[in-house]
Length: 153
Image (cartoon, rainbow, N blue to C red; front, side):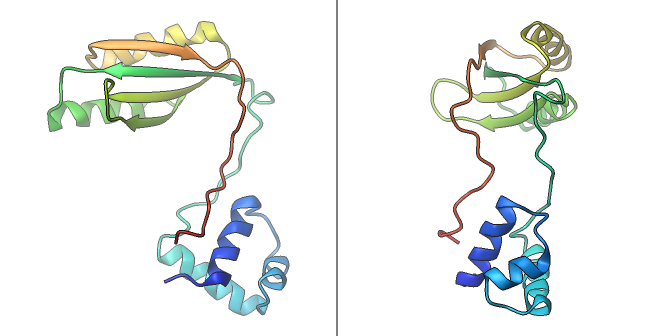
């Protein structure tokens, strides 16, 4: 069970995983060794699954986001395994969610430009059978956040 210090550590590390341990420890009123043990425990228990660098997509020439809505007439475990393999093998596909409602999946795709979507589309179609695929180009990102609330833990 998390306490308030653990939640604060998680919040701080989400904002800046490179924050010096001494700084995190001071902000949560712990010694550096006690804070280090808590962070290690949060990792062991699976609260922290990995630490990553968030890149500036424009600087790495991947500024375009396309959302793709997918319908399929296949729902077997075998097809789902093939779908997971197909989307997992295309690095431009950064997120895939199974949905409720009229559509089966939504994919988030990072691209260097809109024209490159056709390359990804053809690659996906080569790898897996889909019934209906609709693409939507993101014109502007109004909110992008990697930090999630820790108050529910």
